[in-house]
Image (cartoon, rainbow, N blue to C red; front, top):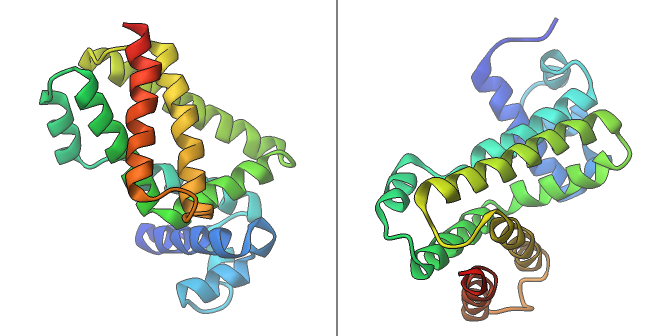
Amino acid sequence: MARRNPERRAALVDAAIEVLAREGARGLTFRSVDTEAAVPPGTASNYFANRDDLLTQAGARVYERLQPDEETIARQRVASPDLDTYTRLMRELVGRVSSFRTGYLALLELRLEATRRPELRAILTERVRADVDANVAYHESTHLPGDATAVKLLMLALNWLIVEQLTLPEVFSEAERDALIAAAVDRIVGARK
């Protein structure tokens, strides 16, 4: 029987994210999660039906923790819909995602694991598609320049920039990263005016 304490479950899922980022999917076991969460042995197995359940919930939790806070959303909604605002928005996005290093690395591990686990692949595909659709809808509702294709191209380009920042941070300085973000917005969105 799965336990229902939501705070404990969240702590265990957060511990799973840390284990995924540090040890990869092969290192993710109930025992490693118990150790990371500093709970008695057997706790994680009481909260999750199986390892796939834990993997799936870790993926959902990463996306949950990557969401901007209400203050950020409110500030973005009242900003003028121009390329400068778009560039600031993308810099903020890259900064927010990069600041949750273990979450993004765990998500990369989950994506690799999804190539071998059809159920996880289906869930991640659904989640990523929903994220793409939400980004396009947000873009359209705020009347930022560019179209749905530009939003998708920026997502693809900036995701790889984030991977570079998290895995090989010495490749680009912070100033270079900011310049690349501005160039991506200008070339992808500005070119589609």
